[in-house]
Length: 77
Image 1 (spheres, helix red, strand yellow):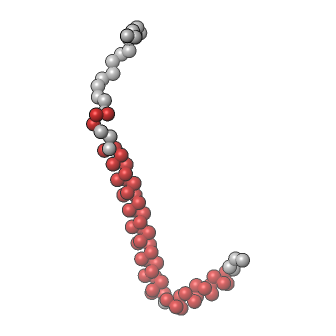
Image 2: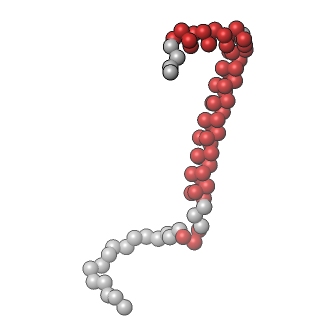
């Protein structure tokens, strides 16, 4: 069973009468700012995880040096 346009309009009218339009506006603004804060916290958390993964590699595993040309004759010992 689905709601039609008239049922939704009646429900919205009752909600507006119960809470008032000023209260609904302030609740909408509060909900919007809460969602905005939640999204920014998720984005900051993802950035922190990426930087922690980069910093978590120990110094012993980093190999520095120059690449030399490979010779054709390779002897196995």
